[in-house]
Length: 275
Image 1 (tube, one colour):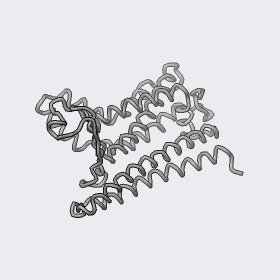
Image 2: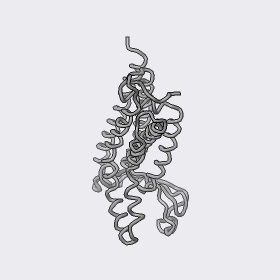
Image 3: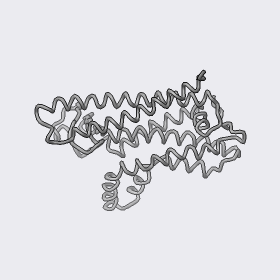
């Protein structure tokens, strides 16, 4: 008979896979409605309803992934195996690490929103005057742009603050923020171990913290370069933002396994207390 932790692992994996496959299919299907010629007065209401369905399905997919990750992590903790995935799960299951993860996840999510243009602040522009927007208000723009960039959610919070939610940026924001939180939680735990002289260098642990910020390098460069060059660089970085962040995901996935090797005792058990 399948044990409790094996059932939890199995269900978790299935939900995670189902969630990501659903998101991929969702992006593919909606991209088929991005031909401007299809946006006739007769079709616009139907495409608008499809746009609402897009976000409802996207939220459901992320819900499945979240539940799947929880069940997978719980299964690893219950199983108490000695592989690197179990070490990562045990480290994050620690109450201190969970608090660090939540703080970093939320904090980096806000930072990402500012960098990616999801959270918009334009003090020199009055949305009510320049765009004729009602404050507060919001709507979904169903068409037309490249795959992953539609439908957009536009929200006017104040005359100068708003939200521009783009699907691909939303997916990257949640994914990268999760991985950054995971990396930070493990790196802090590893650093605390290194201070006790139990087998991991402080340099190695600190490196994990810097790797966990894929958007920081461009931001800091734009600060330290002159004004004219900084503006040009900011434009270039904005255009390449999605690409830079996407290629950083494999690094963010690999790094926890590298650090987990340093958090494993000689017998394969985890050095971190899970309570």
